[in-house]
Length: 311
Image (tube, rainbow, N blue to C red):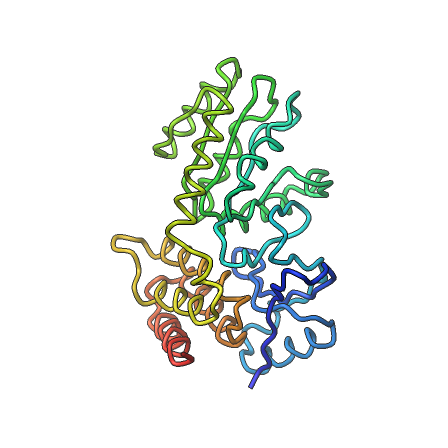
């Protein structure tokens, strides 16, 4: 039996280093399957998983990065959030190089709500310095986890609406709190992007209105997903099992895969057996190639049954 490593969420624990074990899927995105406290444990786990699931062997990797604990409410590049400690995640992005620090105001407005903020423009990120692939992967990973997203463009923002255009290529887009200053020269382009993507979102004229909308979305997300439930390991595994076996009616296969990925990101750090998560990601890769693959669907439902049987 493969060993299980979990993410630490003790609020009193000082931040240190951890070793994430990831499966690189067919899209080239690293999906968390476990976190180890020591590199030796991480390497042992990779060897065990490769022996149990040979097809995953060449896709498993170990990466060292700072441990993000429960008490860290704001996460920014180059650090990655895989475990929001069962709290809703608010993704923060928008115009860069502006004269006003609207991001700080946004974070301040959300601090009273039990959420984790994924701040794409915080910190001294290397992803802003000639690494567009790393930047896109950071955004994709955190949008997959996000319960709401906030975009604001100041009048002097030099960004285009490419952020929202990029979101169209991703599988999961959370509810938007969107705003742009009336004087922003690309405001018309923003409306065009929204129409092209068929996104029904109000574009607020002021920062205050945008942030008020963000607060409402964050409060709604917390109300429907109380942290006291998902902090329990069985709840996260139940969420993942339901995402597999009880899909939202009308969802396409790609949308169902997205829903499973969101649930898997939560379960990956809540004592879920790493072997089951690895099997799940291999099956999802097969479904990306052929959404009617009966073997892949059987494997996915077998994983769901195994998750249910653990509790």
